[in-house]
Image 1 (tube, rainbow, N blue to C red):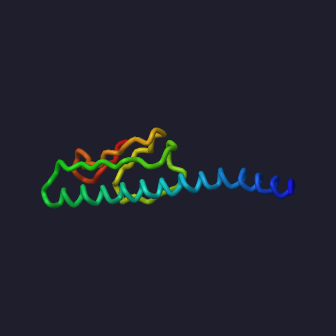
Image 2 (cartoon, rainbow, N blue to C red):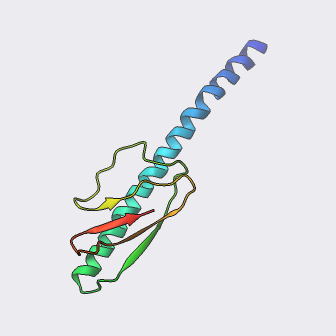
Image 3 (tube, rainbow, N blue to C red):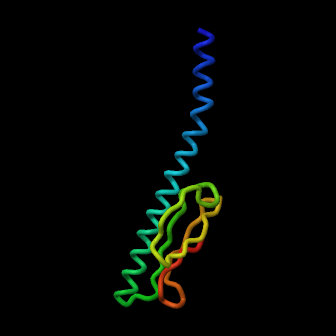
Length: 103
């Protein structure tokens, strides 16, 4: 009985960091998807003449930087996430050629 408890404790000790890492990666994926959606909205508004549109994306991930590589649209500049669950402001660049997300 004692050995079974020890084995269970080892499994839990091993699985918690793996689960936490996967949870953070899923939060990063949500952030990347939300940033792409905000980019699409800003670009759509710009095409229809609303040049001062900006969108706010609330950061879900809790660690600074990206641990996964994401493909954002060409010209869309995304600043690295901070470690305090901040926000990005997505808006057109000053030259009007594309958009940027500033955290």
